[in-house]
Length: 451
Ligand SMILES: Cc1cc2nc3c(=O)[nH]c(=O)nc-3n(C[C@H](O)[C@H](O)[C@H](O)COP(=O)(O)OP(=O)(O)OC[C@H]3O[C@@H](n4cnc5c(N)ncnc54)[C@H](O)[C@@H]3O)c2cc1C
Image (tube, rainbow, N blue to C red; front, side):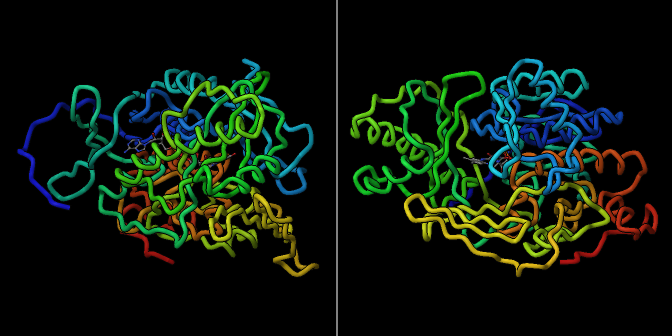
């Protein structure tokens, strides 16, 4: 692409804080709130008009199990549990009647956005909405010392001692010069939509088969479809569009995907109406296409699928989970699930379900898996940490780690780690090294990449 230089300009310092978090999904808010509750001065920057990320701006509404595999032990608590309790007070969450891998809690994501406002306000986090992190600021020695934002009013700077990248795509890490990489097949982004007058169509089978039969006519890519009613409401949220091979961390691809996703939503309405059902009424579009996967950071440790499926434990554990490996693919269209208990399913929109075992019977089944803190720490950086879907994980490991109950914990871990580094005068890698029993003190230098 042709490049030009902009004239240098002076910009206002919007805030001077200890920690600046870029990205305000639950991941980013939980990072900010965790650090603020520990006593840090924290700012958070979010381009949407609300917090919640994929959950609020993209309408994604399920949280998965907070317990170990046999449901005998709660393994996820913290802010995830606290937010569920807040939603309960507003009748804004419904729980699965029986434990199952598909979902645990169904959220009213509009109410979630207001709960996140309240959390930010109560903890004194300084919020910047309608503002995007576009670059990092460096001191004379090249050390990161702030975030450049583009918001209402133009460019501005938030000075900070530690930076947390919770942008999903790793925008802040990329701007800082972290090495970014992509898995061979990216999981596709999806435009969700909310409807009234949703017809009685069996989900997902019947809609999947209707799309299969008419895929060419309506130019609809095939793959798994799902949808659900909002708790205590007749509004139906549909997740059935998909944009294959799209890296929406890049501006042109993001623009094209937003427009194509909305076209697909309309095509699905047309298809349903042409099949003789009443036309579903489109009530609301997301303000942001839902991103499943874009770029990942090169960190101190790349999480392997085998680590996850074998339940490998890490001394620097940042998050625990049980959600299955869930990889959406286009070739063939469908989703492959690998469960911790050793079973494997391939779910296609139109073929009979394939079932096999990926682990020989009789071998031990882990109760849960762990995500290490080192997978959140960009290699070669002292005061930058990532949380969310850009973490360093192979395709299969990422397929499980990517759900919100897991990424929420990476946010809390990033906020806590940034606070501990601030509080003890260490670098972020030194805090992780201390957790790994490799504590050689504040001046020990950078940790080696162990990938
Ligand atoms: C259709 C669909 C269905 C899914 N279903 C489920 C499900 O049922 N349950 C589940 O748990 N997970 C589900 N997932 C996965 C899950 O939603 C995501 O993996 C998860 O939400 C990612 O969280 P995140 O915080 O990393 O990123 P995001 O939720 O994408 O949040 C990133 C935030 O950063 C902001 N941002 C972006 N760029 C910048 C920037 N430069 N500066 C500042 N801020 C920035 C964005 O506006 C956004 O608020 C689904 C995903 C999709 C797309």
